[in-house]
Length: 103
Image 1 (tube, rainbow, N blue to C red):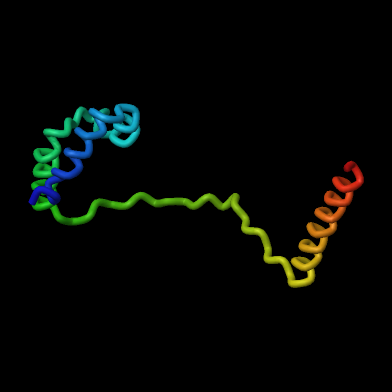
Image 2: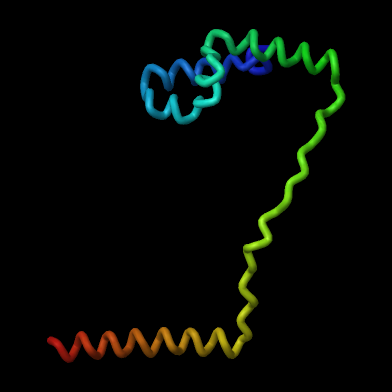
């Protein structure tokens, strides 16, 4: 019953409020805005359960339009991958040669 009515969340809120106030403000910003205290969570959860029992039908969902601007890169062929690896090897060898010339 304690977990159903958010007892563990209230305990965590109290712990963070005492130990790490900055993290408390980050994690529970929406609770703070609504004025919900750690001790008032059980009443909040009870009212939410009551509202669900009165009207258990799901609320209407908002239409979500995905962001179409992102385009995945095409896969490289085997030859392209091998050429890329060889270019990296050549660059590293040149870098090592330049370091050995300096010494």
